[in-house]
Length: 68
Image (spheres, rainbow, N blue to C red):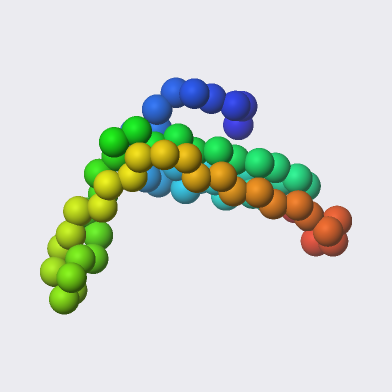
């Protein structure tokens, strides 16, 4: 998959892109969240609203063994 600045509409698409990129020999991924809201666990197990605004960078480097 090529580098893209297009917004990802579905979480499943984002997961597929991340897994593909992380399997590469060496890669850096930067995700830029701008006022993103996600529903997740909150206090006492009740649903809560999480807000993401900023960058998350993932880096991986393969040792060369078991690359697929």
